[in-house]
Length: 133
Image (tube, rainbow, N blue to C red):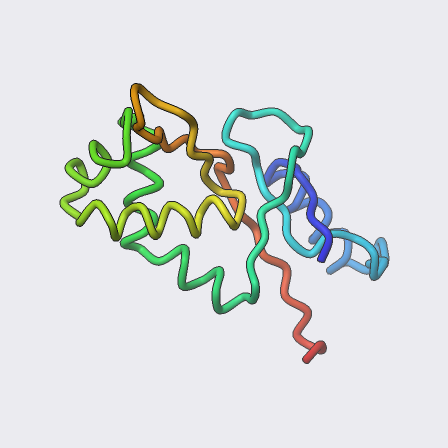
């Protein structure tokens, strides 16, 4: 599945042009659009999910709290993030690894053996072809 880095405005313009019939969608065009957290346009890797259902489950309200804490409070370690959010460290680490696999979070080397969670994607936009199975 292809991915595209772009702003929400670009995604909106693309979608509206398709809806108006001003342009056709090429099958090779992106199905998932995302904004990188650092504001740059170049993609090192894309955001990816095994399925729409897996993406929706990973981006649950509880897990979005983790992402917001990473973005706003910039924890220095997984332990600090777990303390901030009141979740068990092992559960936080498991969720973070899923975010890393999806391309939403990076785990950088922190002090000592600590892993520092960094937000890699700010927004994720899904495109769903209602006619595909």
